[in-house]
Length: 130
Image (tube, one colour):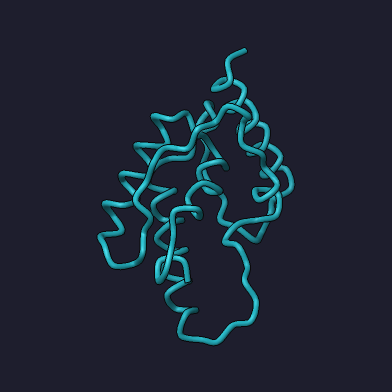
C-alpha cells in the first residue's frame, strides 16, 4: 500500500474514532468517504481559530492551548512525509489567500483529514499565532 493511501486510511480511521467518541472540544467536520474534510469547513475552522487567537491576544494568558484535541496532537505524520513549503501567516496578509494556498498545497502533497488541522498550526507566527 502506498504511503499516501496509508495516510488517507489512517485519517479515515482517526475521523471515525472521533465521531464515535463525539469529542466536544473541537468542531465536528463532515468527512467524505475518502477521509477528506470539505474546504469550506477547513476554512471556517481556520478563520475561527485566527479570530479566537486575535481576541485572546488582548488578554494576558499564562497558558497555551492548541486549537485541537490531544488526539490530533498525537498523530504522527508518515515517515516519508515532506510538508509543502509555505509562507508563514503573521496576521498581516490576506487570510483567505493564505488558507486557499494552504489547502491547495496540502491536497497536492497528500495531506488528509486531521493531518490538515495539525499541519496548519505550524504555519502561524507572530499575531497570526498569538
